[in-house]
Image (cartoon, rainbow, N blue to C red; front, side):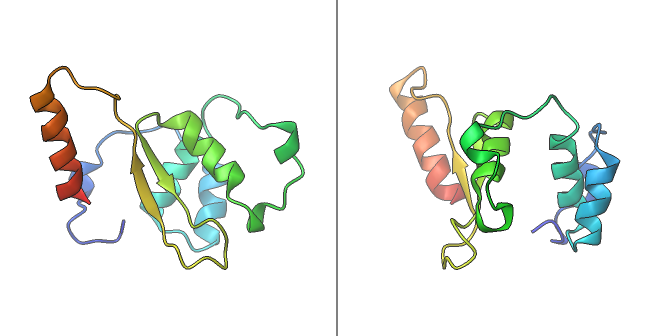
Length: 118
């Protein structure tokens, strides 16, 4: 998606603090530059919360750590990876807006917008 010709650099004009070591590791592993910058920014912030049950997980086989990072970063939008490497379910984007808008019209408008967006 980040290689799409419609995604122009002028839309990505916010200069973020990134972890250059993480960025380089992602680039070396084959991730494209825009997505590598996004994830390198996530790891340049505050320390991550990791539960003791997840500390010894087999990272390549589990998406739990990725979902923890995403869950503590964005409250209203989350990237949802496939549940496992063997899954036929692809990547998804989950929207978690406020539960209730101010008026019934706004609730309906938001619901229709989400349907059009998906």
